[in-house]
Image (cartoon, rainbow, N blue to C red; front, side):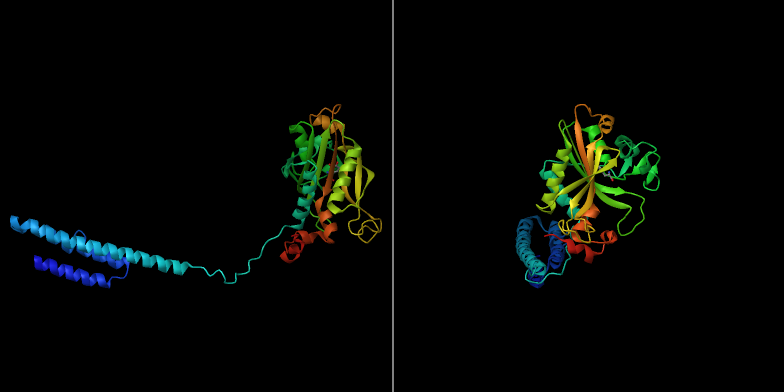
Length: 342
Ligand code: DAH
């Protein structure tokens, strides 16, 4: 048996010297120390030795087992280190290598202008409120004093989903929603997408964007409306901007006005954009009709309000000199990336 052990030890040393990876090491460990490994079998065969020889044989087998296990563990540690080093090398990154060109997105010009306007109004203490695009007839029309037979409800203008559900035709329903759910004082702006059954052309689209404003408090007057819109115009386009109010009609405001802005292109001198007048029309506005206040649960004897609504596409087109609205929706990246403002 001594001879057998010596041979196993020699053979093991020889094979260990040739092992270069974890798989080889595992195979060798199995061959020597596994369930049917050479040393395991040898240990089992000890039973056939005379009793007095067994302790010495056991010691010798243990010594060889320990020696081989130690060597294998040491080799295992070395292999692990080598494999880690190889992995690190494989995964190392050359930070000086030029990167692949990754196109960076940019904000859509409508979002850009919307954000600029929101910034001006939030700076004046307005909250931003949004509402659903699929809207109840109640909020889109009824509570805004647009009764069932009003011409604005004509099927030509409004996309009906069901009898009492529409795609909102303006952002004004957010006013009605807010008045029915909040107590004054109210100071909100409501940006969003609106829908009208219009044919697509250079100045029309069935989907476009508006921004609504609403202020309700005890002593709100028409001059607060004018002051607010003047401040807005100056903040957005410069100190020389003015607003001009012209009498108009909206069922939800009384009195109502259409509001012109100093032409952003010529700053009032008169040009092609403003057709020589120096003014461009950008807003509808007025004092909230007391009937609307009452219908929405706000006491019109105690409170007054002003409201305004503007189309964003028109402002975007004026600001960037875009003459065809379709360009805003075609998604041509070459066009859209011109408006990056950073
Ligand atoms: N909702 C109107 C429209 O879509 C715009 C408007 C006019 C909103 C006057 C207002 C307002 O809040 O006071 O044409």
